[in-house]
Length: 250
Image 1 (cartoon, rainbow, N blue to C red):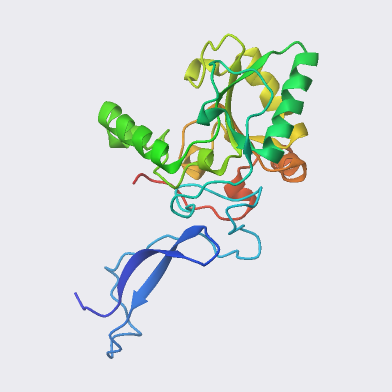
Image 2: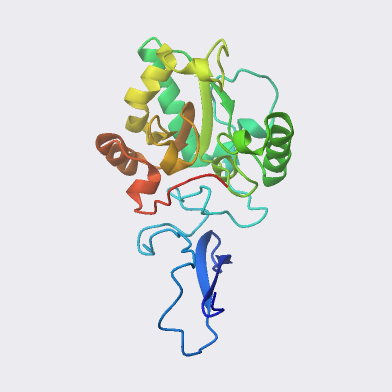
């Protein structure tokens, strides 16, 4: 096989923060350049949509997933503890959210309570170091292939943005586990979270797009306008930003 075009996938970062999967192609400028071998493999990359995909980690609609990464050791500067119920006590890191998201969470919990639904926070902000520890523990316990379906690599977790919160009922039963699906709390969130600027980030039937299994408890704040659009069109953030890369394992 000719050594003409050699493709390699690199992670490239801009000055502003978010890294994205891109390609660099090395050419040896020989006569075969215009006739690449059919045996060469093409590397999939996100669709270029620089005008829409936010590249600032501070943006409320920042896209973070298996392809788009936060800057190393990024930590939001406006983290606060929302005034809501949690299933645990103490002022732990995982109670925190960014200020605007925290206020929206308070409003959502209040709205749910008016409908007879008592929600509780399970896990919010998570540092890159904490995510690394969690990811490694899941790999050791479940194996890498299984862990990839529900745990993000360090720097690729939405929890690090301070804009995500795992939510359960007030008893903590089925917190961040599959049995939360179908519960009154999960149903209420699916129907009303968008009214407060939140979305179910990893919806059912979209696993090949998000790269993660269905998580009805994982709420991501994106702002009311975007949340309404995503809800009405029944799409994911990847689809909203036209930045879909089919996920077929790592």
